[in-house]
Structure formats: structure tokens, C-alpha cells
Length: 375
Image (cartoon, rainbow, N blue to C red; front, top):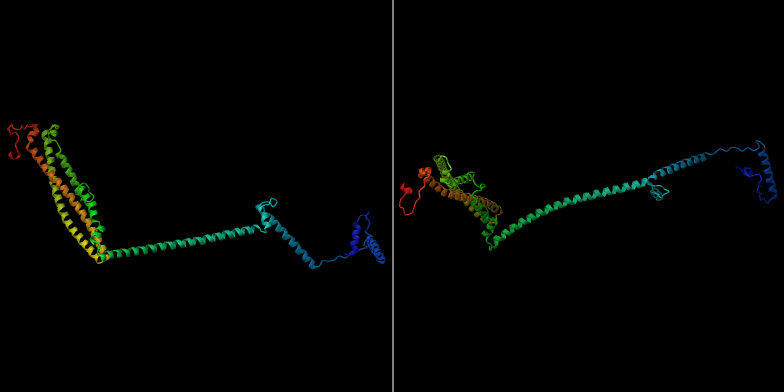
């Protein structure tokens, strides 16, 4: 648009009652020319079709710039819209929410999520590395402990060998006394042999028939505690009751004799076994001390184990032997008592059945009571 067109346009926009600004033209000739130009332009504007303005086509470069400007404005508007939507969960901007803080820091929610994910990944890696280190250290500790234990056992074994050699080489220590304390034979005999020998009723270390022989002895003893006179007084048939009691005594006498024979045979067998076992025990004891004197660890240890085994077996056999000897002494005593009871019942059968009693008065010389040898 030319200067003349701009001036004419401004004159049209100016109100009618407002005067046109006076142009400061210093040259009179120039002022006349300007005035003429204004008049001509006014005439052309007033007449229809008087002033024609040629239409100017835009250049290709201007059109390209205009399209680029539109695209840029569109992208900016879309960016502003997405930013407003993404900041809504973090609070209102007008109230100073978290989204405003992010925008002030020139950050977006995507940046925040990325940072949080990175921190979580770093923590996971650190924990994985730390767990691997702990597992590796625990394996090393267990291996070290096992090695230390093996080493300590080797040292202890070596020290035992050294201490054993010192006992032999020194010459001042009594080897038999030290070995006896190691074996502990006296304590073993006291705890097992004596208790088992005194406890007749136990059936832990005895043969199966031994408890039965104890029960048989109890029945025989109870039969001898019967008051024959009272038994017959309580019976309606004195003769039958006396015969039954006599049969019981005869059976108990037979049973006592059988058990006495069994006990005597067992005692004899146990004596032979004790002698044989103690002989083996003594041989292993001598072998142990000989191997110990030669510092032969293998033979001395084997001989010691055999010695302990034979010593325990000898103690067990001796306990059985003593228990049977004690029970045999009881049977010997009660066998004599039951024989006397049977003899007394048989010789006084008629008097017992009739309930007759004889009073022996000292110095009467009636001789109502006679001895067994006189009968």
C-alpha cells in the first residue's frame, strides 16, 4: 500500500468534525504539489471506478512461512493442552500444587516416573549384589569352620600321640595305674556285678527259667506257712483235706529238687564260662599294655576294645553266677524244711485226723511222745 492510500484511509476514519492535521511543510512549492495530489486523489475516490488498486499475489516463500507458523502454533496449543491434563492429578496450579512445582523446575510427570524407576532399579541391583556377597561369605565361613575342625582334630590326635609317648619315655609314671584308670574296671564291677548279684528277682540279665524258679520258691515257702491243725479244723472232711495238703507238699518237694539240680548245672556252666572269659580278658589286658609300650596305636586301641568287651562279659557272667548261688542256698534250706513237714504229717496222720493232741509234761515219764528214730 502506498503512502497516498494510507493518508486517504486515515482521512476516512477521522471524524468529520475533526480537522486534518496540518502538515509541516516548509517548502511552498512542495506544499502546492501535495495539495494538488490530495485533490486529485479525492476526486478519484469520489468518482466510481476512479481509483483502482492492483491485486498483488503472495510469493511462495511467504506462503511457506505462513504454513510453518500455523503448524508451530498448532503444536504449541496441543502441548499446552497435554501439559494441563497431565498436571491435574498433582494438584491445582492456582493452589500451588505439585504440578506447579514440576513446571517451575522445568520437569514433566514423565521425568518424575523415569527418575522413580531408575531409583528402584538401582536399589534392586544393590540388594542383589549384597545378597550374593552374603551367600558367598557364608559358604566361605562354613568351609573355614570345617577346615578348622579338621585341623583341630588332627592337632588333638597328634597331641594324644605325643602325650602317650611322653608317658612311656619319662619312666616315672606308672603305666599300669594310668591304664587301669582309663579302663575303669573297678567301677564297672561295683555298679553292675554287685547290684545284679544282690538283686535276685531281676530278670534282665538272667535266663528265662530263673524268674520261674523264684516263683516256685515262693509257692513252696507259702505251703510251709500253713497251720495244719487250723486247716483241718475248718474242713468238713479232715482226712481228704489232709491228703490234699500232703500231696501239695510232695509236689513242692519234687519241684524244689528239680530246681536245685537246674541251679547246680547252671552254676557249673557259668563257672566254666567265667574262667574262659577272664582268661581272654587277661590276655587282652597284657596285649594292650604290650602294644602301649611299643607305641603301637592301632594294636593298643584294638586290644583295649577287646579287653573292655571281655571284662564286661566276665562281669555279666559273674553276676549270673552269684545270683544262682544265692537262690540255691535258699532252695537248700527250704528243701530240708519241706521234707521235715512231710515226715511230720505222715507220722501223725491219725492224730491230726482225729484232732488229738498230747500234752508232754516234763518229769512225768509217760513217754507219750516218741522220737522219729524210735517209731
